[in-house]
Image (cartoon, rainbow, N blue to C red; front, side):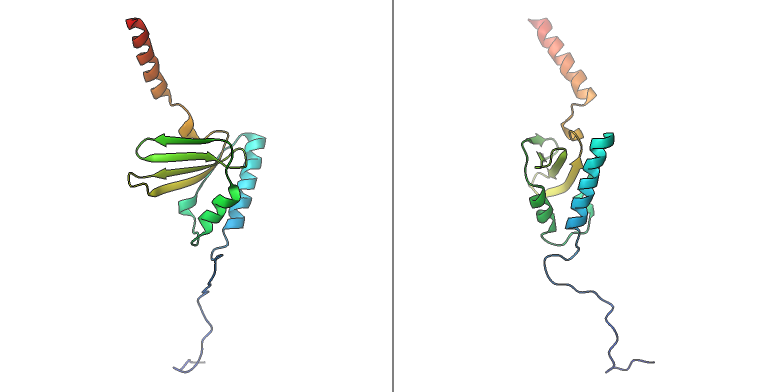
Length: 139
C-alpha cells in the first residue's frame, strides 16, 4: 500500500504533555532504595549522577523534594561552592557543585555513610601535620 498526500500513516512519535514526561522519578527512588539496602548489607556505596539521566523539567525537583532534608548539611568552597546535604534518609546524600556564577554544574545522589568529598585527604592531613608541627616548634 502506498501513502498518498491525503493518506494518514500511524504516528511514529510519542508526544506527551504534562509533568511526567520521562517517568524517571519513581524508578530513581527505587534505585536509591536498593542502593541503600546494599550499603546496609555490604557497605558498598552508590552514586547517581542526576545530570546524566534524562529528566523532564521539574523531575529533578520532585526527586529532591521526595528525599527531603535531614540533620547534616555542609558547605565546601573548592573550585566553586558545593553543598552536601544528608536527606531525610540517613545514608542518602545530595551533593551539588556550582561554578563561580553560582550555577549548578553537577548534582549527585550519593548513597554512602559519608560522601568522599567530606573525607580528609591524606595529602591535606600530611600538610596539616607539618604546619601544626612547625607552629608548635616555634612556641
